Image 1 (cartoon, one colour):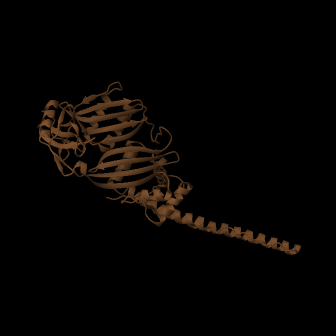
Image 2 (tube, one colour; image 1 turned 90 degrees about the vertical axis):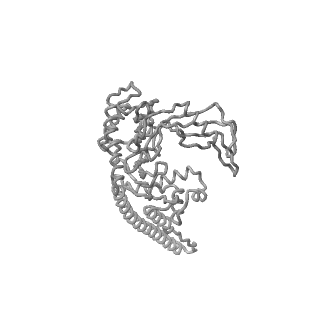
Image 3 (cartoon, helix red, strand yellow; image 1 turned 120 degrees about the vertical axis):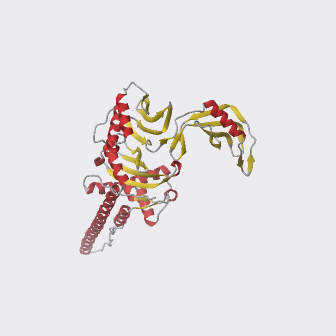
Length: 444
C-alpha cells in the first residue's frame, strides 16, 4: 500500500501558481507550521500542542497549505519538496539585513555638523541600497529554486496521474462520465492507496483522492476501484459558496431523471457492460411521475425530497431485492455528489425464500436458548429473552465469497443489561435453508 502527494498545475501562467503559494504563506500560523515541519515530521496532535489553536483551525490551515505539506503512511505530516523550497524562500526573506541607522553627535562647529549630516545620509542610502540588493538577490534565487522544484513536482505528478490503469480510468470517468471541466481547476492527486478489503473477502480495493482547486472553491473527488472495476465516485465540496456547483464541460439538466439517464448513457459508453444497457432501457421507459419500476431483473427505486434525490437500480428476482448488487446515484442540493456501482462485484446464489419472518424469529429464539458468552472471565448462560419487542430485517447477504443468498437478521431484546453491557442478541438466519448463520451479543 502506498500514499503519495503530487501537484499538477492548472492551465495558465506560472505566475498564478506562485501567487497561490505566496497567498498560502500570508497567515503567520501557516508559516509557523512550515517552520515546525522543516525541523521534523509531526503528528496532528503534536502540531496542536505547539500552536495552541483549535483542531478545526489547524485542519483549515493544513488544507490551505495544500501541496506544501504531505501526509506520510504513519499519519505524520512532513514538508513536500515544494514546501521545502517555500521554507528556504521564507528564511531568505526573513534574514534580509535590517537597515541600521548610524547616529552622530552634533559638533559645535557648523561645518563639522554639515559634514556629519552629509556622511550620515550617504551611509543611510548605502545601507538601504545594500538591503534591497541582498533581498532581491535572495528572492531571485529562491524564485528560481522554487520554479525548478515546481517543474519537477509537476512532471512527477503528471507521470503518476497517467501511470496506472486506474488513474487513467479515473480521469476518464471524471471528464467523460461526470463532465467536470478539469481545465478550470488546479488538479492534485492527493493519495492513491491499494490493498485487500477484509470486509469483502479480500477484494483488492484501490482508492484515489483528487483535489480540484480554483479561486472560488476547493473540491475533493474520491474514486474507488474494486478488483480493477470502477465502484465509487464521491464529490465533496471543501470550500465554496453555498450550494456550490462544480464547473462542467456541458450544461447539466435541471431535472433528476434526465440527469440520471444521461449519466448512465455516458457511463455505458465508457464501460460497455450489458447491465448498463438494460438500465438505460429501463430509464428511457420511466416518466417523471413514476416512482418504482422493474424491467427484467432490474428494479428502479426513487426517493426525492426537494433538491435531494436518490436513484437506486438493483437486482431483483422472485420478489427478492438484492440491494447489495446495485447502482446508486445521489443528488444533494441539486448536484450529483455520488455514484456507487457494486453490480459487477456480487453474484446471485439463490432467490428462493423458504423461511418466513415468523419462522426466522422462532429459529433465532431456539438458537438463543442455548447461547452463552463470557464477560470479565464469567460465563453468562442464564438470561431472559423478551417476547416483545423483536426486530426482523430481510436483506440478502454473501454466504461464501461474494455470492448473495436470502437472509434474515433477527434482534432479540433481553429483560435487562447483563455482564459485558449486553442487552440484546443478534441472530442471522439463512432464508433459503433455515440454518443459523451467526449469533452474537449486542449492546446499545
